[in-house]
Length: 310
Image 1: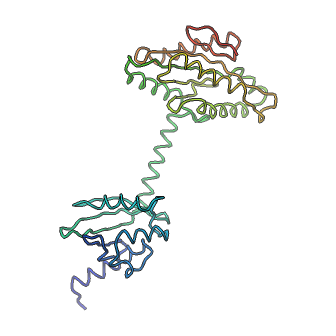
Image 2: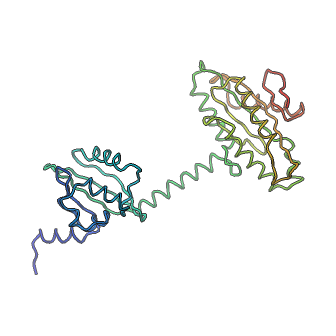
Image 3: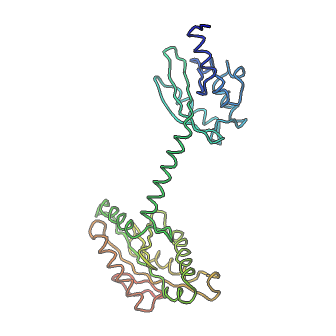
């Protein structure tokens, strides 16, 4: 039995898994196929003639398959209204509550009607998200220390160099700290390497809480750490260093031993951005650290100043 082209097209639109709807120039549905109606959790007959915005309100209130991620549906609709006021063609993605993804397109017909199409691309989207996550994990491995989660030495030096070279030398000074966990070898000897690793991790969790959001901390190697304090002159840098030293000295370590105490030796330096190379800064801060250790430990020594004892 022969069928005319229009009948074939109509039956194809009804049977396809591609969601299709058409709204007139007043944003009222004049067509919606079953695949698209499923996204709204409404039968086709309850969609036709209704405003697109009313259908979206229903989908949001009934928590339909379509995921509308907002706490303010009216604000979301205002943004959608703005996005729908265009001429031509646009594409975007949407996801559903059951974990599917759709690649969507909208075409503004010369009559003013808006033709919408949604094609499922869940597999491709999941592959894309997996690639993004894999890339993030690889970047994490390259830039971060496995044990502590802080920046590693190589990445810290790269960031330090980038920060210093991009900063105007006329700007205010910055500071650099070198931190050493006192007598760390005795922790491994007396309590085991697992306890030593736990102390390193615990200190690394404490350190960011004692710094500002824009400060940069890294594990340089073993029990040695570095902190870059951008835009920080010596008085403020010493205050931050002393805050770190004091917080660790007063910290309880019941998982190691009730009587266990950890102290830090800290060497600090203030530098003018763009003047000194990162390696030289580390060497000078490390020299101040050596002075702190050789002078009794558990103290802050700042280059060019007297020793600050505990």
